[in-house]
Amino acid sequence: MKFYSTNNRNHVADLKTAVLKGLAPDKGLYMPESIPVLPKEFWDELPGKSMGQIGFEVLKHFFCPDIPEDRFKAMVEDAFNFPVPVVKVNDRISVLELFHGPTLAFKDVGARFLARVMAYFADYGGKSINVLAATSGDTGSAVANGFLGVPNVYVHVLYPHGLVSKLQELQFTTLGQNVTAYEVNGVFDDCQRTVKEAFMDKELNAEKILTSANSINLARFLPQSVYYFHALAQIPKEKWSQVVISVPSGNFGDITAGLIAYKMGMPVKRFIAAINANKVFADYLTTGSYKPQPSIATIANAMDVGDPSNFARVLELFEGSVEKMRKVISSYSYTDEKIGATIAEVYKNDGYTCDPHGAVGYAALKDGLQDGELGLFLETAHPAKFIDTVEKFAGHKVEIPERLQKFMNGTKQTVPTDADYKKLQLK
Ligand SMILES: *Cc1c(COP(=O)(O)O)cnc(C)c1O
Image (cartoon, rainbow, N blue to C red):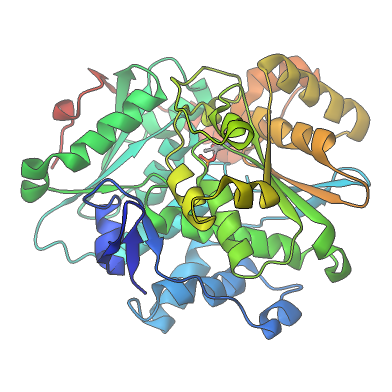
């Protein structure tokens, strides 16, 4: 499969180039040249299949034979080694729990897969590879842990000083080895811009190998499509056509993966992009014009994005037409106050503890579900990652899973810096 740039359909790259470059030279995002529609047998045989089995069958269309099938199968099984269950919350709403991986957020899925794909393309011409990741909270930990100890690969995590939770911060600032954390004087969008600027510096890129582990990298977001199929595998077939999927969204990588699954023939009804006070996308659906804004800090901080990178991909999937997009996606935006009230309400009514991001997804279903529809929201992180906020609103103690606790004993080590890519300690 070849991949084209969202800025120019005629610019195409092979898999290896697209993965190692991350961003196309014209700043566009890589998209698969074609999206295969899965055969009827795939859907007939889906119920009960594992993430690994589904992952191979879906992703091989994009990654093979550039990566040989047998090797690819092993990589997929290895990357998707934790459960992603659908759990019933009440009669109309279920949740897809994406937090059972090593860093307790859905980003483990994409990061673990990406690390394996990059390790496969480990022919760097004798040079080291620098993986750059801007994070609003969870990307940093998923990427750092996914790549930790991979030979010849150096991870540079950029995060906004003071704007990620303590536990999130500990997950990528205490690792050492091949991981460096930069505490940037700015907001998430400054971190993201800094990374993009580094990729645009021709001289620097001639000298060093830089790549992105953000969802601008196609090998980060494409594997996320797998858990949408896996969700359906756990829902009775006769209900599939009523399913509405609510995706807590920031950079829109997650929902883009869902839309790719939809294009591959996933027979669900529609999607909701559930967002916090950073409501550029909701405004776009209403007005038809896209106006990036500086990001606003919220209690669902992993979604504090004022100019979602993957908007270009979403637009591409709907051929640039807001009317077509409106037929499949709606969007709801929530204030911190409403997010807090939702955490309280879901616990009180359904006995389920949401993290602030999942709460946004739930709230959007509550407001957006119509008669006869079945809601599925993505619980994108474990509530313990946002323990202060969740305990405050849910009004009960949240237990910290052991795999999160082990980070709490580490010592934070960072490089404080301005938003300037020249300050990165590249190898
Ligand atoms: C990253 C993240 C999101 C947003 O996902 P996007 O793919 O950027 O839209 C939502 N919730 C949590 C917990 C996250 O870490």
